[in-house]
Length: 119
Image 1 (spheres, rainbow, N blue to C red):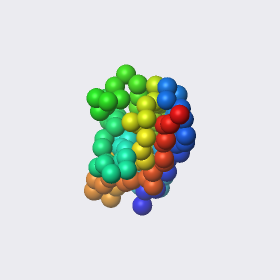
Image 2: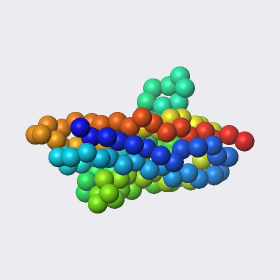
Image 3: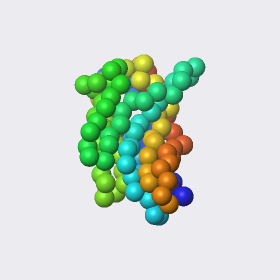
Image 4: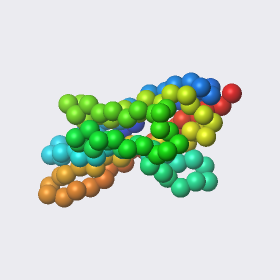
């Protein structure tokens, strides 16, 4: 099994910054794509950013220029640096790790970390 744990959420004022972290642990797995999703109250979960094993990144339009995704393969970790935060960024942020394990590819999710942007 692969365990995924996020951290770094919190309360911040508009224009502020937060850095989310996510670490995958377990045995016998090889990580491919790592991604951040978010789900605001009443909304569907949406992809915020992803980073492939080779470093290719992708962002939802609403965060381009403000958020930066990065990864540390040695630590099985992915990060989301969030700058110029807006109230519309308020959501629970989830980390998803896509990994090969036992000749199968599976997606593993964390429990989520809450981000609240408010005055």
